[in-house]
Amino acid sequence: MADEHVSQNLPENPDPQEKPVSGDDITPSQEQPLLPDRLPQSLIEWLARINRRYLALNQEKANDTS
Image (cartoon, rainbow, N blue to C red; front, side, top):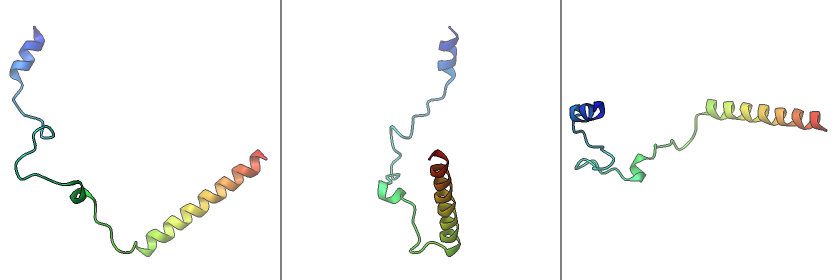
């Protein structure tokens, strides 16, 4: 009984995924983020530091298990 009351009060709002709005046709290629030609040097340096730390931790782990 309560379910009937709730369903009657729900506005009809179709799921946009089921029925795309006209003119809203986005292809998967358009959804891809644009990447710069080169990554910023600060990002490259940060990634290099993270990678070195990761390798060092793996080496420590390998030394501890042997």
